[in-house]
Picture (tube, rainbow, N blue to C red):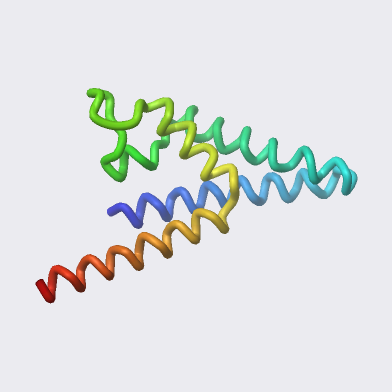
Length: 110
């Protein structure tokens, strides 16, 4: 379940990456370096706050009852992750898959 939600984040991060890439074609090289990271971050934040996408809520680390991250913090962090592009999200997915396999192996041995 968590991996399918992360796959959704990967798709959003990929879309943000493509938007930034297209914009980068019309900007000068010196402008690109400064503007594109900000655009990626802005689009990622707009998506996460606008659609109320929270990665940490999916992981059980956020909640509205004071037992985790506040929803706005969840949206902020999720927006930053989405805005960073697909490579960091892909790395996160791989790390979680590895941890999941490791935990399953412990349970089976245990």
